[in-house]
Length: 269
Image (tube, rainbow, N blue to C red; front, top):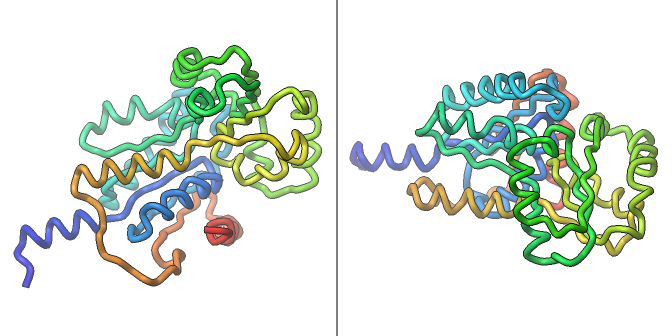
């Protein structure tokens, strides 16, 4: 029989990890996390009722994020992952200051990866207007600027991806990205929705494009932090039914959001 201290330790290890995004786009981050942490249990909050975040004022974004964080705290999550680049850029500093005991892991555009692996090549950063204008991104950009980079605020793109309109998406990409065909070699996917359309972007810009996004590095960092805090769930499970290990909440309450989320989650996981 386990002692009380052993039981408390076990409870800490098996607590859920909270992940949130302005919609279902953060599934691209969750998939990378599951690859590295397959034994954990998760709560995913999709705030599609307020999607997109990229066009909102800072105060509104912070308020939306804090409401979600309060829900995760009520559910006793052992860590909170901010999968939305805009939310990360606008709210994580405030949240870490207000909730210093909570583990926050925040996504950021993978511009440093271009510096590390493809510094001399022309680069296109695709992100929301909110991310590109944020102080956090601009500090990153100016630190690693290769002076061959184009910043493209993709207004409305996350919403198109969220709604799954293929025809509208094709028209948007041709109109917005056509100017950069043959001009860039790297594309930074600065919104968690964008990896869902990586193939579509490649069809417009060319198949030789190298893509960068921060999901894998975030997953590695999350594992490192949980390990340091002795919070990893070491229970090995053979069951790969991720639907049972992930609690999905969508602020709009639309059933089709949940159905599409699990469809995307199980695709090539």
